[in-house]
Length: 113
Image (cartoon, rainbow, N blue to C red; front, side, top):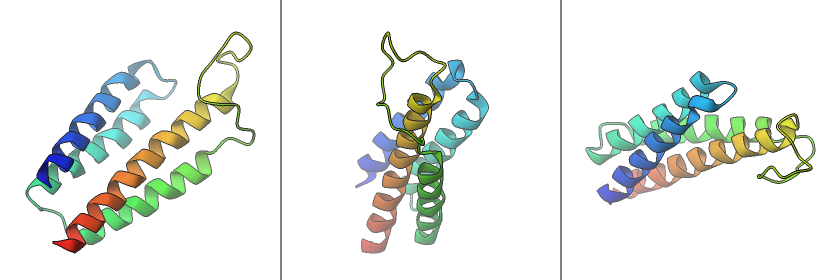
């Protein structure tokens, strides 16, 4: 079980590391950084289970609010340039959704403990 926390923490650290070229890197580094820290805290069960539930709700609310008004996929092509914020917002929503999923998984693991 502790390997789930460790692997998630490493993935979130890598996600934070590649945000340097994002239009708002500080926000996304902080989001993925919080997810990484919480993941690593789960190895030793330092946090109460309700912490994961609260973060799940926050990340889920962020993912829903970040969803683009018109979904155009996740990848740019020759027709969709960076000026198209729908693709960027879809990616950001997906990132928050992944964070939310991890927090829900951690909550369920902690409750089972």
